[in-house]
Length: 161
Image (tube, helix red, strand yellow):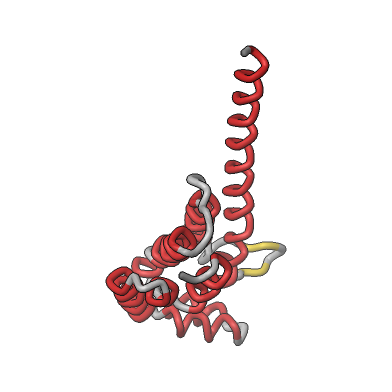
C-alpha cells in the first residue's frame, strides 16, 4: 500500500495509477480507460495546450463539453478511491472535499464559455481549475462543521452522565 500523499500525487498524474500501485488492477484499468476515453472525446489535451498558450478561443472551440463534463467526477472519484485505499486510517467523511471539488469544477466547466473576471475569459481549463480550490475548501469546511457538531454532542452526553 502507498501512503495517502503518494496515492493522491499518482492520481493527479493519471487517474488509475494509484489503484495499480495498490494492486487494485481492475479499478486501475477502469479509471485509466475512462480517463483516456473522456480525454480523447472531449479533446481535453488540445484545450489544455491552447489554454497554456493563451488561446482561450481555440480552447473553447475544440472542447467537446458533453464529454468534458464527465471528467471532474471520474478524476476526483479516482483520487478519493486512491486516498481511501492507501495506508493509514481514513475518516468516514474524507470524501467531502473530493465531492465538492468535483461539483465546483463541473460548474466551472459549465460557465467557462461565458464567465469573465475583470473582462478576462478563462475558458475550459483555467476556470474549472480555479473552481477546484473553493470546492475543496467548502468540503473541508463542511467536514469540520460536522466534526464540531459530533464533538459537542459527545461533550453534552458526557456532561449529562
